[in-house]
Image (tube, rainbow, N blue to C red; front, side, top):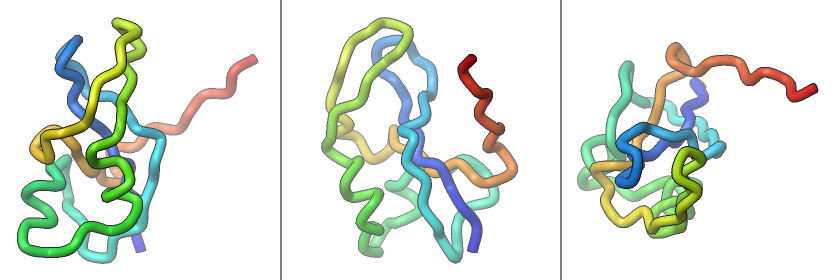
Length: 88
């Protein structure tokens, strides 16, 4: 089952940021897709429900904001995930 990263669109800086939460979805999207579209009419997986309505942090501006719009929370497919570099 593929692993997807949950990301969100930042209303402060206009960029997409990772939430650092990854989930397994059997019938997930082939490209970036909002949870509003992907789970329309279906129940949300617990990990997605936990992110939804929670606080997000913009590393560029240093501000926090609520994730209130399901159109701005996304699942990123495995092909778009980049390996994380190690901090030295």
